[in-house]
Length: 388
Image 1 (cartoon, rainbow, N blue to C red):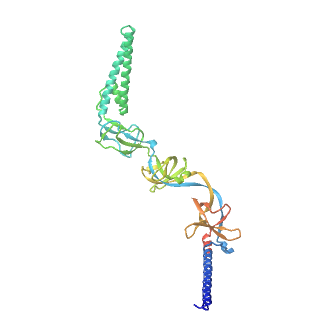
Image 2: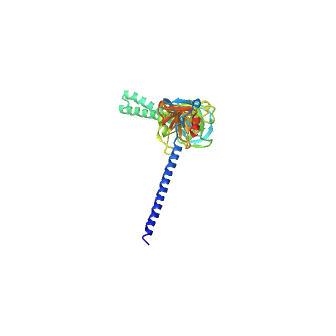
């Protein structure tokens, strides 16, 4: 290549480099301008309204306030186990008759069913023998006591006779208690004591408490095992328990003594109650804690195992910054915000964090301070003007 051609080549390369640098600078400037324009488009701006437009806007001054939290939970109805019992068969044998039906009110001691039980014959025979043995032992003891006073028997023999009599009387009393535990009537026991003949005695299953026959668990002919076979469930249905499932996050808001409303869905009105116990264990499956609500049961609307909705009203007041529900708007991402009046005029959009809703007010956890004024009427109009 000639030495003349080199300077021309240098000039051409320099021009190309200069052009590339200019293009790159312009592109950078253009990119910065586009970013600034996008940022300006997405940044909320202050909204200024005319005097006439301000007539459509109503403001509210945010201030601290107190409220009572309510906790809603699902629950299951159960018997009041302080006033309900499972009746076990006190004797063995087949059921001969059922004397009551489920749903029937009964009094304490009322017969519920009869049983053809050999336990009764054995118990009656044992009591008769114990009565006779006790009478004979006492008669011998009294005779030996008299003889001992006249040196007819030794003092040791008299003392042994007294001991034998006391043992026989203890056996008699134990046999009688067996009849009582088998629910034999007092008249039948007196007949046995007086030596009168008794007809064939049927075993009876009796109600241990007054209440309603909630469950009938046996049928005629069924063979019962003493102390094992459940026969009936007797319960006082005028008062029930509702076991409410309380999430761990709501535990701090409820306490024993808080009032509650129980809704069944089918009842015309909610049933009132009181929280009387809060469990100490967390259910490993639901991660909830059981709160027991004692409720009255007018008309028997609540049934065992019924699913209900429970609303517990806390007696303990909670304080926080409150704003009306009407002040809360939502942006395109469904995030809550409010319009806050500014000192120099106009309104600025500000996102807030919502807490508990107390009636027509929200607790504002973050985003506002006491004394600030927010738009509560006309917020949509302010939003429309901001988007123009």
